[in-house]
Amino acid sequence: MISWPTLYLSAPINPRSQPMLSRETTAVLDSARDVAAESERERHERQAHPLGMLLWAVAIGLLVRLVVAGLVYKQFLDPGRDHWEFGYEIGRVARAILAGRGFANPYWADTGPTALLTPVFPYFFAGVFWIFGVSTKASALAILGSNCLVSALTAIPIYFVARMCFNARTAKWAAWCWAFFPYAINFSADSMWYHSFVAFLLVLLFWIGLRLGSSDRIPPWAGFGVLFGFAALTNPVILGIAPVFGAWVCHRLARGGRRWTRAAAIGSLALVATIAPWLVRNYRTFHKPVFLKDNFWMEFCVGNLGNSLHWWNGDVHPSGNAAEMNTFERLGEMGYMALKHEQGVAFLENTPETFLARTIRRVSYIWTGYWSFGREYRREEPLDPENIVFLTSLTFLSFIGLYKAFRANPQVAAPFFIVLLVYPAAYYLTHPDPGFRHPMDPLLVILACFALTFRFPSRDKAPQLANDRS
Image 1 (cartoon, rainbow, N blue to C red):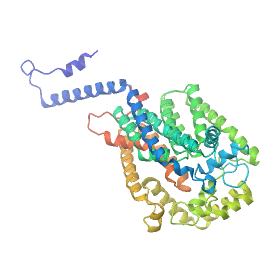
Image 2 (image 1 turned 90 degrees about the vertical axis):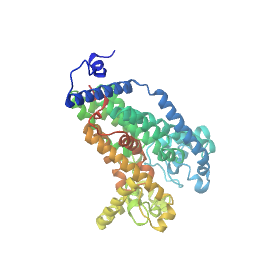
Image 3 (image 1 turned 180 degrees about the horizontal axis):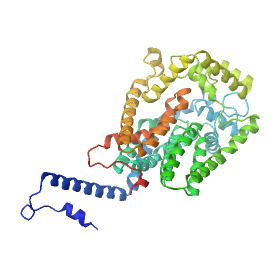
Image 4 (image 1 turned 120 degrees about the horizontal axis):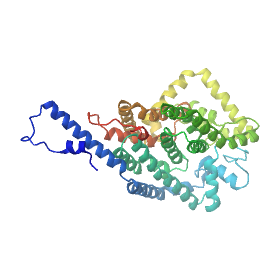
């Protein structure tokens, strides 16, 4: 039903039957018509059903990824170094699980139980190996296909986050951009690591967190905590955003007069209960507390000790140096990690300026892809020039979108800023593998699409979170 104000504003004015209107009055009426039209358009956008569009975006995104996977999967079947390319440490631990040795042996020697990895992906690999065989063609296609499916499905939370924070137009752009997003295709179809899965979990947690800003009910908050715990058991870095992002969600609850303390307590307890069995396992196995993983100082040394040419120094990692592997086998995992702790602390104490310089370079690399234009480095990373252009452009557009969001409504921009600020912090300190920053890409795509679709004329309505709209 059309209300009488809308009908009045839409009706033409007959100059013979109406008195002459001043320019100011005409401008007011024109502005009111624009607002009414904009409100009507927004109402249709909110009521529009996205199912068909999302199915097409997911299906086409999956098809593109599967085609690429079909072209590259053979590289993972290389038998060199006992099929090392088949999942690296994840594949090795999965083989130990299947062989009855437990969660152990991340490299080639029988070094015993490990906390080098968290359990989700090694057990997933072990299940694939049990069904399709160890390091077989069928296993490779199953793992890559699963990554491709998860990556394609990421378009769904991307769409709903963008629609909830901005508008349907930005949401559609973001979903379709994700279907053809080069990094999403690469890290799902051409990688056996968990980058795509963590990207999906991060944007899913982001979406759920936005929705929980208006609900203090116990079941959703318990589920939120369980999902955060599961994500931490996939990649512990994602746990770093929990306190800050959770505090923002609780702040929204408090503003709405809801019981944020109860919600925070339930979510925290559910998270702790989810990761507790793994912490107990680590303590019982190593007779000392190990929080999720034990390899921080090893990764710190890889990114900081020696080899200024590259952001990664394989000479101080067991997978890249036989002497390091021998030391790992001789000392055992706990002894080796203690040695890396000593080396890392000594590096910080003796050369803090080198650490600061490399940290600045890592920050630059994560957001621009630039590390060096040296000839030797470019021989190792021949695609870096193209990556620099693409990643720098994506970062620029995303930051423009974040700026526009802050200008329009800081409440909408704040959660994006929190995640982009906190999530990569661990990689600033260690080493910035390109896949490590991929979990932020869904949010960057949303912001970039918002930058391209939003303007600031007076009739534009500031973006608001859906559950904040009246």
